Length: 344
Ligand SMILES: Nc1nc2c(ncn2[C@@H]2O[C@H](COP(=O)(O)OP(=O)(O)OP(=O)(O)O)[C@@H](O)[C@H]2O)c(=O)[nH]1
Ligand SMILES: [Zn+2]
Image 1 (cartoon, protein in one colour):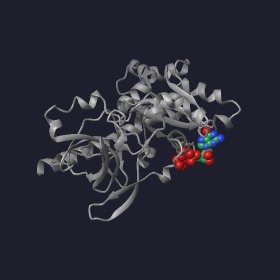
Image 2 (cartoon, helix red, strand yellow):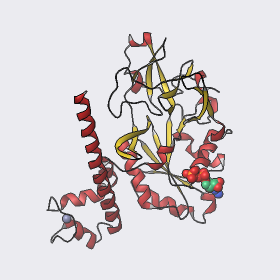
Image 3 (cartoon, helix red, strand yellow):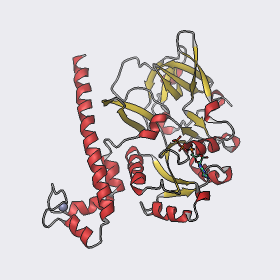
Image 4 (cartoon, protein in one colour):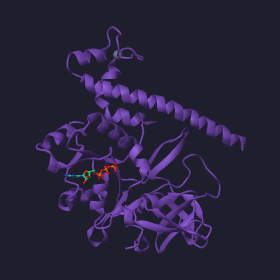
């Protein structure tokens, strides 16, 4: 089925977006969702429309005012030109490769993040914490998906370790190659829901994507697209329809950048995921304590008496430092683009 046959609700349209569009605006404009992004162009789907349009805004905006995968756009009903980008419910971004001072948008309007790890030597608590920080900071529901359950003699051990990370954290144990087993994830992939996957190489992300999508493989999902010069190129779609009975399926974002996310400007996520550590750190009587060798440091005292796990404290310190370093670079970037704007 082509997305153009789908209703807006099936594509993920909900009150959060429709409330942003005034009644009179609907006479001239219609909402479409970005399925993939290419140089200067985006492929979009809406009610009765599937097209490739220019990604330029009528008035160029800031670093985040560019359409990305998963975005909802308003386009002119007649010319199909981009009018504006609707506010996002969530946004994944990262420093642009090769130029850390620029920001690259990865995906927007994601509802759920599958944090994929396998029940083997790939399983790593620090890595799960990193992804949890990202999910919390972005405001996306995290679900830890443990693959290769069929290969581990004691898969429950991994489930317990993951559950211990956060009270109420969703953890699902599956065999990604088995559709019946992967169906445990159906609840997160319902009507119009958008899911993205993160996880290291080889844990089974592509396998899961293919299983959730049903029969067709990623490689066969190509979109024919005009490049504006009359020629045609074939590009890979980055939003995949998830198989679901009676068209109740959602969407899977599978864009390469999603797999290489970094920790930048995620302070609130760090605080939330490590609330146990930050709570102890707040009790420390020195405001600028490094919790190193300062005499009387309460964080070190908590570690000494077993109230705080020192390994977890170290993981927090590393992530917080990395976030601070990357956020400083991001601040420079924003400063620079603000200056460029006032010059215009
Ligand atoms: N037994 C078993 N094998 C699996 C499972 N999930 C994935 N595999 C296998 O693990 C290997 C790697 O899976 P991929 O899906 O390519 O992993 P990936 O995360 O997409 O890796 P990258 O593309 O490198 O990021 C493949 O041989 C899969 O068949 C599972 O649940 N059980
Ligand atoms: Zn201290």
